[in-house]
Length: 279
Image (cartoon, rainbow, N blue to C red; front, top):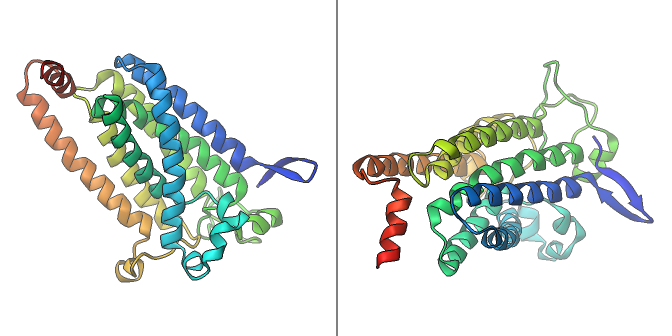
């Protein structure tokens, strides 16, 4: 659609990069605001968010390396501008950021569930903005679409991402952007009313897992195949991860809800925090 906003000399300012930066800033400020509501220090939230960003970028690239055979067969492409500019794979970024969060929260002494409850809505907001960048660039495109909202990408988009031209496609980028925005609004609402710490994060896992699993049926861009599982199951790599994330989130949500109903003194996270302070 609009892969490039303008140029400074010969240097292109890409729409995807600008929106990705905006997505990160919006997510970071949202996490800080929600974290303050739960008594977290704003400075610690910012520190954690910055390190999670670095880990997410690395994780997204590593999973791209795993699922895309051309990078495995041509290792020198890891040093190419194409690899550096690619957005990577979201779930790789999610897992990388989560791993960094677990390590750093222990180091900073931040309560895990309370902190991740602040970051979950922020992540959904960042996704909503970032997927608009995908739409502008033309990546993550959908299958052919005969519906009125089918979109046709430009030749410039094809040059940048390889998106097919001359045919109307499902705007899967906007499907996910809209779904992520709805999830963000629901999680912000839930954050004020949660019955136990962890409810917001685990609700995100369930909702996003279901949304991504469904949207993947309309995707048509090449996404690789880990260990031949896509060929074996007929599901994409992201769908398989969505199942694990969604079902895992659902199981933990039920377990923590039951635990919260057993403890009459307050939310689970409050009890855990009190126990750690008195230990």
